[in-house]
Image (tube, rainbow, N blue to C red; front, side, top):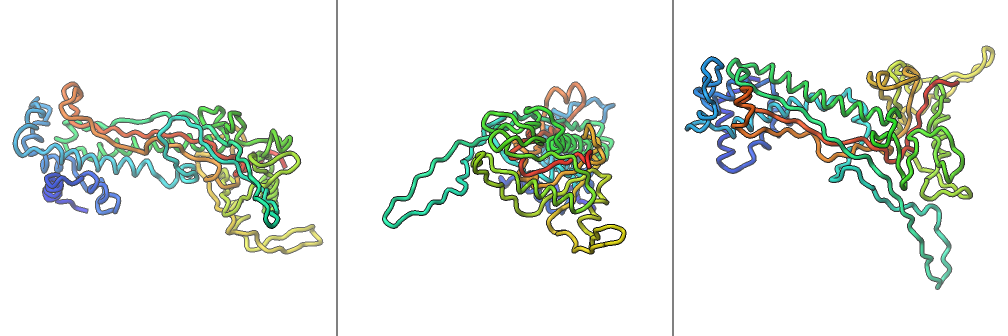
Length: 399
């Protein structure tokens, strides 16, 4: 789309004069797909907002002080900042949020103002409903304390600089490329951290590799089920994924898992897992998963006796995979698979989402490095284990 930069800048200046949030309105236009970052030229934006004299002063050979020119009439640094900032933000966001980031899409984001916190909850009552005789008082019930701890949150970010040369020589593509790299780097880092947790590769509580319930750390994927008091879930197996019988085996595991808040050795209460399960597989198992889930007919038996069966419930499983799985796994890179409701098992604890802010004008970098604008992209969040009983992992290393 061809942009009339002068007319666009005029509209933005009018929004600013009216006291409206020009930055937000430009952002909404980008969100709606009215504009794309590639539709704009950074030099044309500068000429339309800062003036031709300011742009000429960006020529390195002239060694003029652009800060002095910014104080002259006809120069609108606010409009330049709003437009350029949203172009760079949109490019960073496009690269930060990508469909191939499977792990990021599997778990919900939970906003929080704390860095590492105790998430309170109320224990379930289970089957404690009692018969109440006529005229008799209803029995009181007690609520047990239930809480989990989440890891502390680290901040991550990078800066995109816009130099005098980038404006004067109209290096729009270079600026957008650098902005895209920043978004991709931050998004990829987030995706890897999430995958490490949901795949079971993170090893410490600080990195999301442990479930901390009522002050005690447990493995995300537990291989032993001693009893209903000390171990109330078993969600790590070594079964090879070949057919629907392997899914039946996992479903039976879900049926055996119990709610840790209401179960006792004498009276275990099952976890009621309903809805579509996600079947996450290593890339090498993708076609196997498609064959099993999408088969129109299955056959079972020996060479002399064959039984034709109805196909499995296709609607019960949503197949996902990622090329990053093999790289993140330390072992069983091609045979591992996972089944469950990842949105119930994990969450991304977020202090703030991806944000882009601009450095003030007339800063030190403008003089020492000819950087006339700097845009800082940052996000602060961490993956956390909420309830691991909702996902079963198989290494595929057994039989």
